Amino acid sequence: MPAHPVRGSMVVRRRHAAVVAAVMSCSTVLTAQGPVEADGASIPSVPAPQLEWRPCVPGSPFDCATARVPLDHAAPGGRSVDLAVVRRKATGPGKRVGTLFFNPGGPGGPGTVQMPQNYAFFPREVRERFDIVSWDPRGIGNSTAVNCFTSPREAADWNASQAVGFPLGEKEQKAFVAAYADLVRRCEKKDPELLRHVSTADTARDLDLLRRSVGEPQLNYYGISYGTILGATYANLFPGKVRAMTLDSNIGPRAWTNDASDDARLTTFLRVGSDRSAAATLDRFLDLCGSTTTARCAFSAGTPKATRDKFDRLTERLRKEPVDTWTYARTVADAVNSLYLVSGWSDLAGRLQELWRGRAPEPAAFPPAPPVPDPDPYLGEEQAAAVLCGDSPDPRDPGVYPLLEEASAARAGDAGRFWTWATAGCTGWPASPDRYTGPWDERTANPVLVVGTTYDPSTAYPNSRAMAEELADARLLTNEGYGHTALLNPSTCVQDHESRYFVDGVLPPAGTTCRQDTPPFTAPKPSGGVAAGGGALAVGLS
Image 1 (cartoon, rainbow, N blue to C red):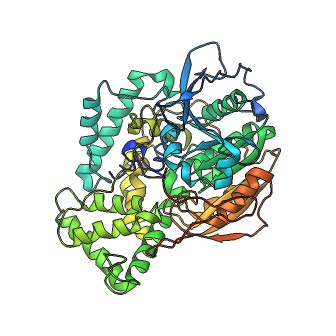
Image 2 (cartoon, rainbow, N blue to C red):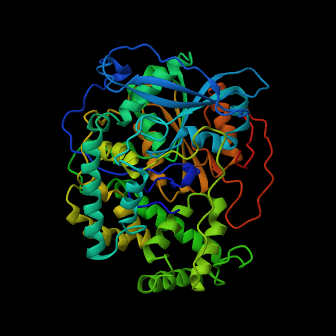
Image 3 (tube, rainbow, N blue to C red):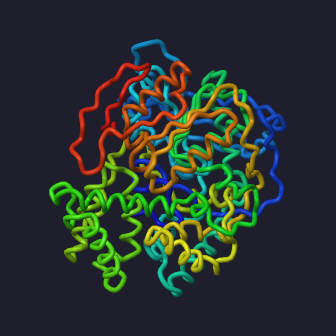
């Protein structure tokens, strides 16, 4: 189903955790940064958790384990929380290099579900030479999770009380704000101690404990979307522990932290430029659709201009008269979310064409459940919100959001309305006492590889340039293409550079540009290995 605004996501949140996770959610008011010195110098040392690996389910190629870590890393003798962990062993041939940790984004992405779902997207040589490990971060999914409701029915009733997509008009906006004020009250009542300790810095310290648990002297890490901020935080807390780190589809650290200021005039996503980037990607979707036949893009009106006009007429019509449950806001949210994966663009065109004909389309299909014990954990909005709202400042006054919406709509059209409201639920959220705000330029033991896609509907490409510039030692690899993350919108060129980097530590030359394997609305191309220190990847989901 489409992501709700606050659920809503650097990457689409779906049932069975979907292909990647939702992303960001809310704000923070904070003055003290907390104990976040380089290499965790001010954090007491604790023993690494023991991981007892077992097949996730009988016959599964994935192994599962549970790690117990301190709730408060500054007070390790107190309460602990459990982290659900998953592993796929290196498949060979070739000498095993080590363990690669993967974060699928969010915040709110359950790695125990999404890594197995997306395992086949990793470059072939990476799968052969590394054990790939992921986990549900604290507060999320199958780990000790934030859950502010007493029953599934109560959670479902709360979800049903809001407009789908984003609120339209004063009545819906007031109901939206009231619903999230209610959510905050529920969360503070249910487990306030957990809410105070689900920051990105907390998770970065968990990641270092997991690194020690698998016996790695330094970290190998692949983070996408929100996972790039997690990676950058780790790199600056533990700079001496970085062996290889790829950050794909980045959030600029200064945009994330509002330049370390709590006085946020813009929302997180407007600072990141998600509205403009989504509008540009949607415009390209309509141009490319209009440049091909209806056999390849069902929504085509024969020319790019005619197809853009057709979309405008459709959204205007839906404002006045929804098609069944498909309102204007739901349709815009579905369109923006569906731009994440180029493989789904044709299906999006089909849904838009059905709406054009006045028929309710079938929602996007869910990916198959992976062979793990709980492929459909509870992923309530409060999980993503607890991280985002505590880490990334957003305006605290709900009254400014309608004004921000109109300003964003003026520069980004329909997508601006969607992204403006994506963090409005953060207005009353409690701040994290351990929000990391920098510095971002600690010298890491080894350089970082930053990957950015030019038409990304969520993390605008300039964020990847910013990440490469703000880290002390990083190299930017540009992927000319569409969609959110090069991992899930494959480029053999990107995969080969990533493989060479992870295996041999060799960065692509400065200024390197790659292209996507399969452009939108074209027949899929065969995907084969290319020997360059790394292999290409099978493009199907495992």
